[in-house]
Image (cartoon, rainbow, N blue to C red; front, side):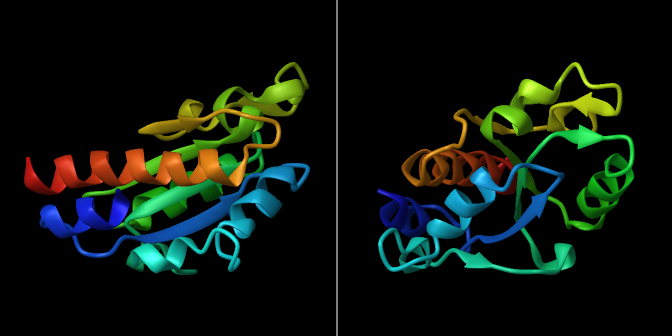
Length: 145
């Protein structure tokens, strides 16, 4: 499905960047599992990059706190337009079990606009891949519109 979508749209192969705002690493492990031969998200042309200036889609895991919200906003601002943001896991979408802590701001959408929410604690690799597909569709709409 994703491969045919990339071919039909005028979107190049998407480059993603992953940022951990401070999670328990459950969602990070599942996000990295998408790159293993079992799920092999790279077969769709999706490339994981480390530089926000090269990224089209930002994957964010973990709760946003007062110390990392500036870093998250800075990474988002460095990404070229158009861009898409995917919040992964219960912590990324709402703050999770830590949302009432004094140092937690909340989910990713409290700092930057989010295009796709991937629920779960931790989010399953299949759900993350589905979220990337939805993020790619929103990215394509921004490119074409």
